[in-house]
Amino acid sequence: MEPDMGEIGEVMQLLNASRLMAALVIVVLAIIASRLITSTLDRFGEGNARRRLTAKYAASISRFVIFIGAVAFILINVLDLSGETWIALSATIGLTVGFALKDTAASLLSGLLILIDRPFTVGDRISFDKYYGEVREIGLRTVRIATLDDNLVSIPTNKFLTDPVASANAGELDMMVQMDFFIAIDADFDLARDLAHEAAVTSKYVFLEKKVNLLVSDEMTPHFYATRIRVQCYVVDCRFERRLASDVTERIKTAWRKHGIRTPFVLEHQVRRADYVPPAEGRSSSPA
Picture (tube, rainbow, N blue to C red):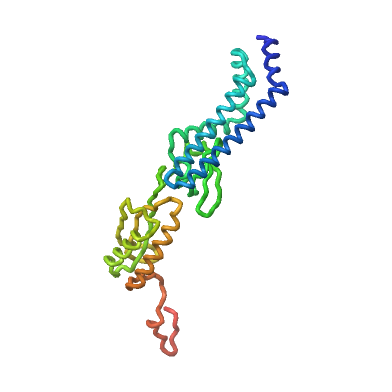
C-alpha cells in the first residue's frame, strides 16, 4: 500500500513554526497553572491541619487534569487534526512512544491508578521497600517520600502496582504510634503500667478521641529476660509521630525513676566486683 501524499502533506503542515509555538505556550501555561494551584492548595492545607490531606489530594488530581487537558487541547484545537489524520498520527505516535517510552508510559498510567484506587494519598505515612516516611507528591512518573531523617526519595509509580506498600494512617490525620518499654521481670508491673498510661494520656500530642492501649508480656531476648509494656496510642497529627514518641518516653522514664521501677538485668557472662574471689596463692586464675 503506497502512502497518500495528501495525508503526508497534511501531517507536515502540523509542524510549522506558528503551531509549534502555540503548543509550547500552552505547555508553559499548563506548568504555571499546575504550580500555582498546587502552591495555593498547599498553603490552604498547611493553614488548616484537618483539611491538609484533602488539599494535597486535590493538588495531585489537578496536576493530572491540567496535563491531560493541555495535551488534548493541543491535539484538537492547535493542530486541528482531521479524522483520518488523527488516526494515522495516533498510530504512529503510539508505536513510537510504546517502544521508546514504555516505562514512562507505565509510570503515567500507574500514577493515575494510584489516584483513583487510593492505596495511599499525599500526606500519608507509608512503608515501601526499605523506606518509611510521608508521601509528599504523587507525580506523573514518580512518588516522592520524605523520610524521617529528611531525605526525599523518588520512586517510580509503577513499582507500587507490583510491590506491597503499607499506609500507617490511610488518609486520616491521626495515626497509631506503638512504643515498647522493658522493666525487670520482678518489678511492679501494675505500677509501671499505670504510670505508662498516665504518661501517654497526658501528652499534648496524643489523640484522646481514640483509646490508649497498654499490653503486658514477658519477653526473652539474647540480652535480657524482662517484662515488656507496649504502649499503643494515636498521635493527633501524623507529622508529630516522633514528638509523641519522645514526649511519652521522657514522661515514662521520669515516672519510673521516681517510683523505683527497675530496668531489666542484662544477661552477660560477667563477674560482678562484689562476687569476685581472688585465686588462692600458687593457683591459676583461669578455669581448668
